[in-house]
Image 1: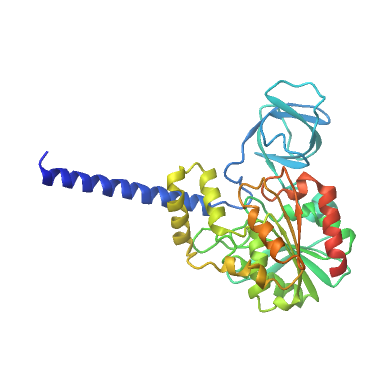
Image 2: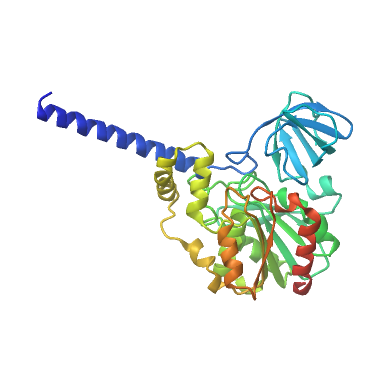
Length: 375
C-alpha cells in the first residue's frame, strides 16, 4: 500500500473508531440519565415465580432473591410483598422460598416474571394504608406537581422525596411510622414522574434541576402552616434535599435532613449506572462525559452542597457498603467530618434505596431517636 493511501486508511479508521466511541458514549450517557421513575434500575435482575402457596412464594435463586428483609415484588399487573427467606422449606438448588406477606395487585402465578423493589405499596395512602390524605397540587417551575399530604397535628412536616427507579409510593413504607407520631407528611412527585411535568430535555439531572421542585414543595408547606420541615430523600431525592437545604429561598425552615442511600458523588453514580447497563469499562469515562454534556452538568454544585463544612442542620444518613449505585464512602466521609451534626446508620446487605427494607425495626428506631428532638 502506498504511504498516502495507508495514511488515509488509518485516519479513516481512527475517525470511525472515534465516531463509534462518541456514539456509544452518548448512548451510555443517555442510559444513565433515563432511569425513569417506577422503572427497574439497570442491573436489577428479573426473577421467575416458580411456585406459590398461601403464605410463600418460590423464586429464581439469585443474590437479589436472597436479600434479607421485606420487599415488594412487581411484574406486569401484579404487586406483592415478600418477607424473609424460609430456609427450612424444601426447595431445589436453583430456587429460594420467601414468606408471602400479601398480594396487593393482580394474581401471582407460576411463570410470572417479576423484580424486587423497595416499594411495598401500590396505591395511595388511603387505599394502601387506610390513612386519610389530601391530593395536593403544588405550583412548580414547570407546572403542577401532584402530591399526597397525610395530615398530622405537629407543626414540623416531613417532605418525602423518592429517588431513581421508584415513585412517590416508596415513602409510603415510612408513612405509618411518621403518622403515628402525628407528623404531617408530603409525598411529592417531581419533574419526570407520572402526572408531573416532564423534564424539558427528557433526562434526569441527579437532583441538579429537580431540587427546584423541592423548593416549590417547601414553599407550599410553609403556606399551609409548616413552621419547620425535615427533608427526607432517597438516592437522588437525598441530593435534591441537600440542594434545597442550601439554595432554597425558604431554607431557614429546614430543621433536619434524612438521607437514605444519598447520591453524593455524581460522577461515580453516572459511572455505576452506565456500567450496570453493560457499557464496557474502557467506555465508562466517555459515558460519564457524555452524560454530563447531555444534561448540562458542567459545574458540580452537588459537591458544594454536600460538602460537610457547609451542613447547617442535624442530618441522619442511612447507607451501606452494598449500594452499587451510590457509593457508601462519601457518606462515611460526611459523618466523619461533621460528627456533631451527622449520624450514620450503617446497613449491610441492602441494595440502593433499600436500607429500611433490610431491617425495618433497627431503621425505625434510629429514625425515632433522630426525629424526637426535632419535633
